[in-house]
Length: 245
Image (cartoon, rainbow, N blue to C red; front, side, top):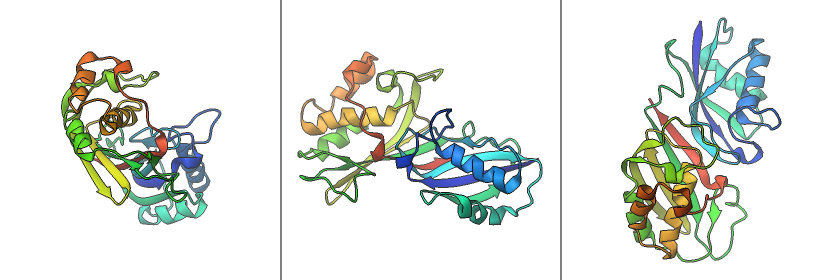
């Protein structure tokens, strides 16, 4: 039995997220269809993260198991990409030990969220960032994000519908970078709840707007109430950058 690991990049604009669904087109479904064409086997592709509808990935990781693989592993990305739509690319393939599981073996995930802080929206950035036209205080946003670092119960930042067994997560790093009018925030953690990054960003945005002080983040965490957090920012600004094992 072969266990094959893939690293995948995709523009999620035209997809209803990563995970296969009955009545919507997803990234997982598209790749599984191609793998079935190439291998003539029914493939179950296991993703490291279930990105939301409209969210993107630069380093999604997935694995699948197959009894016989006629294509050399190093040739697999080219074979798959030939049949994939242009908004999905397999960047790397390798054979890994039988026990490897892209989701359960993940030690850390890195997400970015992009905000275009400009007077007018950008047609070129509209699919990959959230446009916010008013001034934001980056220093206060950076301080607010620092209060997220550590192991906490993040139930206040969980969207309805999450099936997570526990809402305790560890945020290991938070950064804000600004280049011109584009703000990039980077979250590193052992895992993230459904819509967690987007809700954290909506709360940090409240700080950037000057509606609440940076310390308000501590109140949101301790309150354990979703209504105290900010809005869920659009998925289009979210990118799964890397999964670390």
